[in-house]
Each structure stands twice: as structure tokens, then as C-alpha cells.
Length: 466
Image (cartoon, rainbow, N blue to C red):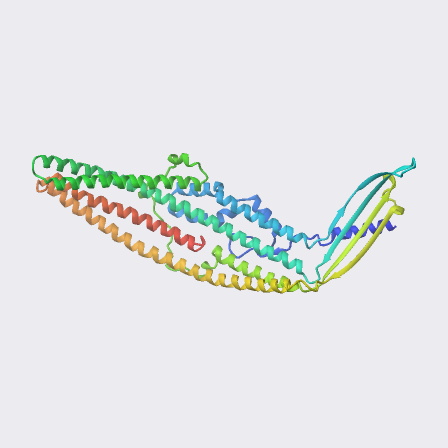
């Protein structure tokens, strides 16, 4: 009977508080779990599907660029980018930290087995001995200190979800921006090659005229300098495009040696068809990852202050021991060879050199720091959204003016072309005037891409909630 009672006592320790990790509110936006769900269930659901990653970046928004190639690169980045893989692994690290801390709320039990052989001196008698001690201990969480510590690690886990979400938004934005700059450079290189070709023609014509004494040597040298400068600009464009191609390869998890295989559309075929908002509601701003993370860190800091206060309270511990000792294995678990004990105690540190007081003050300082970081995050969020909105608005106005200027340049060049056909101006004059058209075409391409990149900037500033 004593053996059965001891076994039940030890079992009760092991079974105590084996409830699943308690429910928690993961967040408010669609990229997170429902408001009440166990952290274990939520984390397992994440492992089964990548849908949360596409929710992070608002995947449908990218379809507004009407470019399947761009959307395909973003999809590849989601699956292959190493920064995103590390961000997801970091979330799992924080999840394991929650489980580790939750273990402190549960009892611990240990079972050992030992054997020995003894022979007394001056005798021929010897014997074997077998022992099996079992220990179980549990700290009664009367003041919920251990639970508060678990809650604090949960807040850290929730904050890590926002770091992960921010990483996905950032990488998607980087892929989009890099891709658009590449297609811009494709067009710029094409136009610059035409400019270089015309400048070479101008130089050749002026060189021929110089030999006939119709053009000064100084003007011929200037034409040669302009031709060389055009070649220099062309080389710079190609260098920038190569670097961006390598960067895009890294973003999508591709070897940069394969950068020449990166396909893309022409900038002329890319047009944003999404609705561009004239204002952003405050409800959208508070869904930014950094904003939500700042909230979680304040909540964690508040819990840490509560835990620091509870360090001044006593701790209550229960200990159970069962010892089985016998000279043969067959009788090891018999009642006559068992010793069992159950006890408890109260512990209260009387003097720790001011450690607990300093810890409480430090946690309060951390809370104040997190609170100020939250205020700063709020202001920064408003600033970044306002900056994105005004940049987008003014760049759009500039783009419209540049398009008008380009149309006027083409109209003007059309008149010059008529003059050339009538013989009133030379081919040299016509070729020189053509560069004005190519220059404004470059400005149109540059301003168009700036507007497209501005849309991505707004998308990132509002945490993809467009």
C-alpha cells in the first residue's frame, strides 16, 4: 500500500499543470492568428502553410503593376530569400523560448538507477546492491510569478512575428524597386546608345567639315569630347544595371553568376493600375509592423516590472522523494525496500545586496524606454507616410510636365525635320536637335520609374496595408 501511495504522489507531481500553453492574442491585422488561439496551435498552423507569408506582403497588390515577371520574382524571393528564411527561423527561436519558460510552471521529476558490487575485507562474502531513487519537485506559483514570465516571453514571440512581417515587406519592396530600376536602365541604355550613335555622326560630319575649312578645330574637339562623354555615360549605365541584376539575383535566392538570364519587361509595357489614395486613415498606420511591435514591447516591459516586484515575495516549494534499494533486481520494487518522503518549504531572500531593488528600478527604466520608443515610432510612422504621400504627389506632377515637354520636343523636332527636307538646315543641325528629343525621353523614363517606385514606397510606409 505504501508503495502505491508513493507512486501516486510522484505521478501527481508529473501530471500537475500539464495544460497546453495558454491562449494569447496574436494581433489585429490579417497577417496574424485569430484573437484567441493557443500559441502552440498557431505555430503549428504556420508550419503547415506559407499563406501567412503572402498575407504579409499583400500579394494581390503587386498585380497592379500588370507584370507577371515582377510578381514571379517576388514569389521566388518569398520562397528562396535567405534573410526571410532567417526571419522565420528567428520566430521559431522565440517560440522555443516560450516553451522553455513555460516549463518553469510545471513540476520536474527525475528517475535514476544505480548498481554496485561490494566485498568486505578478510571475508569471502560479497554482494550486489541495486538502487532506484526518484525525485519530484514543484514550485507553487501562488503569486503567478512564473506565469508572468511566460506571458513576457509570449509578448517577445508576438514582437518577433512583426519583425518577420517587416522583413517580408522590406524584401518584397526591394525586389520591386530593383526590378523597376533595371527596366529603367534597359531603356536608358537603349536611348543612350542612340545618343552616342548620333554624337559619333556629329563628330564625323564636323571632322569632314573641318578638313574643308568649314568648321573650327575647337568645335571639332568639343564634338569629340561630347562623343566620349556619351560613351562614358553609357558605360556607367551598364555598370549600374549589372550591379542591380546581381542584387536582384541575391534577393530571389539566385546565383549572381546567372544575372544575365534575368528576364524583364520593357518599361513601356509597365503601368500601375491600382487606386492611388489621396489620404491614409490612421487605422492603417497603426497596422505597421514596427508600430505593433512597439506595443508588444511595452506590454512585455510592463509584465517584467510586475515580475520584478514579485521577486520580493516568498517562494513555496514541494519536494517528493522515493528510494528503492535491494540486493537483487527481482525485489527492487518491493514495499519493504522502499523509503518515501514528501515535504515542502518556504524561501525568502533576506539580503541580496540591493539586487532586487536595482532589478525593479532597471525594469521600470526599460518600461519608460519602451514607452518613449513607442511614441517615437508613432511619429516616425506618420512622418514616413506623409513623406511618401507628398513625394508621390509631386513626382506625379513632375512626370506629367515631363511628358508634355517630351511631346513639345517631338513636335519641335518634326518642324526641324521638315526644314531639313526643304534644305533649309543641314543634317548636322538636324542630328544635333535630335538629342533634345532623346534627352527628354530619358527624363520621361526616369520620372515614370520614380513614380512607380514611389507607389512601392507608400506601400512599405503603410506596412503593405493598401
